[in-house]
Amino acid sequence: MADRHADRLFSEAYDGALDGRRRARFDEHLAECERCAAAFADYAAALDVVRTAAPARMPVPVHLPPGAPQPQRARFAWPAISWSPARIATAATGFAAAAALVIALSVTVAHRGSSSGTPDAANFRPGSGAAALAPFVQGFTNRTTVAVPGHPGQTLLLATDKATYAPGETVHVIARLLPATTLGQQSSASGSRAVDNALASSIPVVRLITVPSAPTGLHAPASPGPAGAPAAPVFGAGSTLADASPLPGVTAADGSPVLVVTVPLTLHPGDHVALVVVLEPPPYAAYGGVNAPGAQSDTTSPYAATLTLTVG
Amino acid sequence: MDDEALLERARRGDRDAFGELVVRHQDGLYTMSLRLLGKPEDAADVVQETFLRAYVNLPKLRGGTVRGWLYRVASNAALDVHRRTTRKPTSPLEDADGKIVELPDPALGPEAGAEAHERSLVLRDALLALPLDYRQCVVLRDVNDLSYEEIAQALRIPLGTVKSRLSRARLQLAHALRGSTVIFGTGEVQG
Image (tube, rainbow over all chains, first blue to last red; front, top):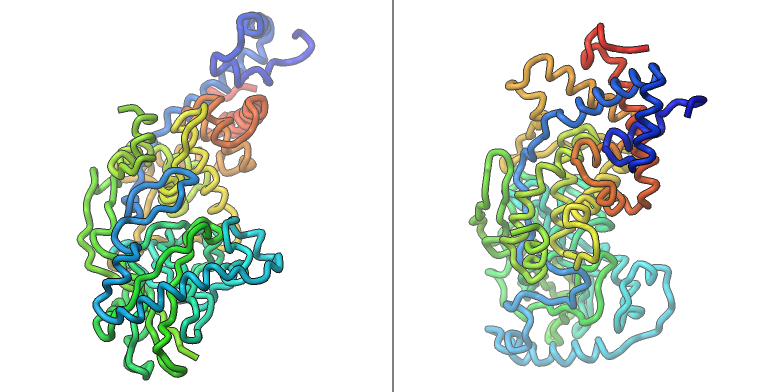
């Protein structure tokens, strides 16, 4: 090694990762080469500074989504509360409508439609009915987002594939909690956030509710932003129909479930329905953080986002 | 209980087991992100995003460590934040009342002396001067003390690439720090 210096071995030498023979040659070289001996001493001193710099502490609590943690590639499994047909069948009102809903649902799912291989299909996780739904999943442009108070960085997203539906038609719904300020393409406080990097997390309840015919009878969709008060949920003002169900075997591009609910056959053009997603307490536990050691539970009251759909 | 056991419990739906992983690893992940990206707000975003992603996608580890896996999720999240923030400035964090939360680097806090403060800034600038892929390696090794194998797992690169990037990164970093009188004073710099 007399004709070249040993800089390229400094890293492994510093870590003690040179094997016996290479270590011996390295030590020999340093014994003969003043330049390398001094350079390695400086090198080690500099890295020592880096390694002994004080670690930082996460300064704000980490928020976890509601529900249980999910293993990788799990079959989609919802919390027990909302999705059984029994619950649909025993809805407080509209039993006949609920029965029609279940029938309409199976008819819709069974009808695959033409598989046109749209460009969106590439973003779509394969499953039965995937091709038929691909146009819907990518273009969920009818949406509302609501900031969740008390949880900076959490936003509730509710989106449907269209804004107007015929009676008996299936509404495709995505309802999710989005994470922080972070990874969407847009971060306007009042606009919608892109869902490209957002997460799936379980949303307890999505309900379809009939409302008085005039949209002014509804509370306005919530204006997001930490200072704004959330819109009061609509479901107190109308009659609750069925809860949405996940569509088996189908997920949106990021793994979140696509929910379906069917517009009742009893509605007429010009009627309105409200699609409501409700977060029920306690949705979060905040862990750790410099000022909040250990787990804490929140007792946030139920929180809802609402989309108004028109029957056309 | 070790990390692997906690992960296994979390995979079976144990939320508290996941919470324990959060408590164990959040500071290390935050420090990594802070040294990698430079801004406390970005670092906090990365940590939050890491645990949100991990929560719904818990792997069955086949070789590798829990730490390697978590730092992999975090390294991806940090890249995403880095790409975003090179286009736009960071939006500040807000607390529950909507007030902007100032997040100073704790190492620069009032309990640190003026000297520690300056050294911290020099270190930060020296790290940020490295290309991002070099910076990732040296942060994981010399800030977070991950093994070469864990770094390979975290960055999804071969072991040989870890060693060569680390070597180049450290040479550049050491050179920058050597030249700093704040770190080494005036009498110690050689050649």
